[in-house]
Length: 80
Image 1 (cartoon, rainbow, N blue to C red):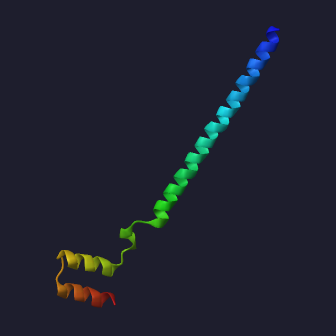
Image 2 (cartoon, rainbow, N blue to C red; image 1 turned 90 degrees about the vertical axis):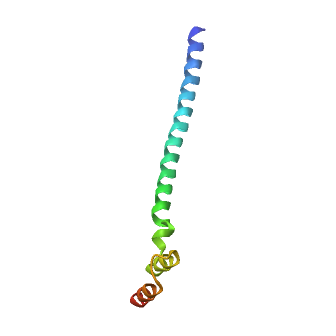
Image 3 (cartoon, rainbow, N blue to C red; image 1 turned 30 degrees about the vertical axis):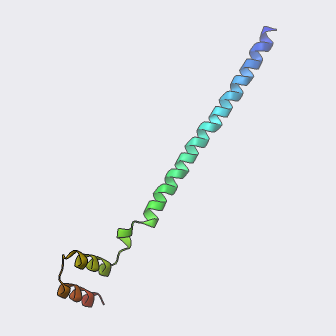
């Protein structure tokens, strides 16, 4: 009678351990996939500053007053 009780509790314990192992590895694999997607999205998508062209930067500098109209026109001419 005592052996039967021990066998069932061991079986439930092993089942619980297997379930927790599946949950643990699912979380680990999910985290790795999330991390890869996050890092890939950041490098391929890029920020808006990476997509700006030289003329966009010149326009922004002209709008801020960092360069004069003559300098801006010269930059435009040089880039064309």
